[in-house]
Length: 331
Image 1 (cartoon, rainbow, N blue to C red):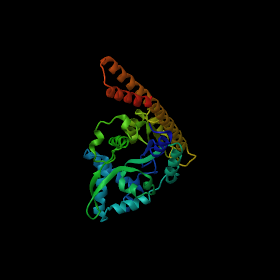
Image 2 (image 1 turned 60 degrees about the horizontal axis):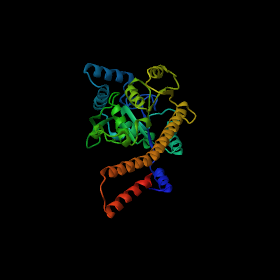
Image 3 (image 1 turned 120 degrees about the horizontal axis):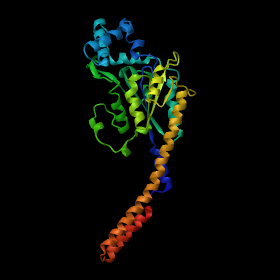
Image 4 (image 1 turned 90 degrees about the vertical axis):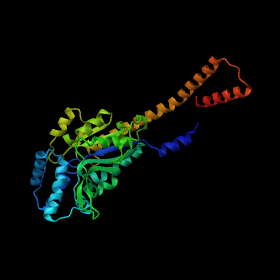
């Protein structure tokens, strides 16, 4: 049996984990990421671009994300502007964020650490991965799941590599829970005991703003996790979050303001506290279970030898006695 000091040392290294998953557009940033500088750089009105993109999707029974990705490549060729990965990242650096977002991740991590919890942050977005990678907050994110392009040897966007829409967003929740993070890794479909999940569903938070986030919100909430709806703090239009709350898609709703004194910060602290309490409860149950199971094994073995009613040599008796003593140590 490990002594108490050894157990405390192990606990200090292996802390329970939480995951906070974020949509990006209208959740961390006040508008669609393409709208700020990418689309205007083609000298196109954003409204016209989205109208053309939506019409293309409708007329061709096409995924909307694939439609706007196709439109970007079309306009880049028409305007003679190469869509490189570096260009997208420069665009991402200019995408504005809601108040408090850049300080949010450090604050949450520090608070969680004070409660004995390790937090991993993930973005699950229908926007463009390369743009998000260029944003200052990318360094805080464990993994960015978003639409992305396939690039030529010269680093120019040629074809969609990944399209993330509201329905397939949920696969990334499964990946995060199971710790199988690579998009191509089909082991995510393999059976895994819940006790083996690196981040159990009840330790996952999903933060989004609209109906496109419903599948993820519903999945996380239905499995014991937490879903939070946010709304623009300037317009204060709460219709979407009211509907999400009334439909029991979310646990909380709050303005998309991420400063320490904001409502969403309060909710996250409450969730971290609750997760810490549940993890402590799991640990206590585990400590009680070990000696109880050792006792059960001892009784089972003792009865088995008693029922056999056979004579044993001194060596055999010594072996059985040694086994019983070993089990007694666990009791």
